[in-house]
Image 1 (cartoon, rainbow, N blue to C red):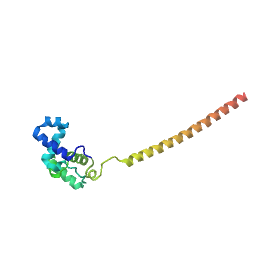
Image 2: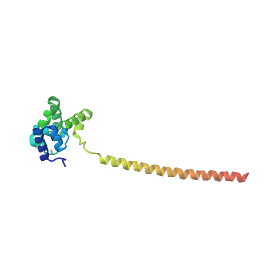
Image 3: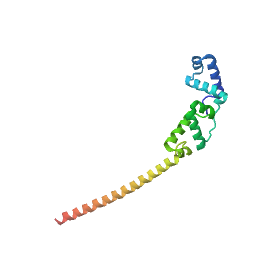
Image 4: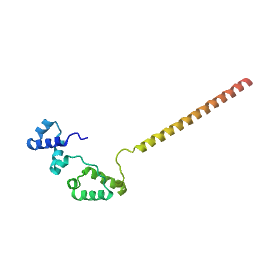
Length: 159
């Protein structure tokens, strides 16, 4: 859920345009960075800039086209044309350099829960196996110690 409503952001931007940064920060107790960001969104996209964006999945070809456009035209042009953040495009560009086109086709969002669970299971199994081995070793050493003491006892009796 958004921290501020669309109506509130619009109210802040309009107040900012009429009264300036200092008055707006005092009245609404909001950072000037947020105010400038909202103003930029409003100036660029109008009221649509304040609406929550739906998550869109992009194909590899779309990502490559957007990256090329970003390299040629810059981040502001990408934001206006595709309504997409430059940070996302930068991430795609980094993935393309590190992993190639295959990396762009993967869904890399979120934590990989299954791998973490499997590691925990494997670690637990390894620990149980080690405990079992140590128990067997301990039993062997106890038996060996008992046999050594028995032999020493027999040798003392012979003397």
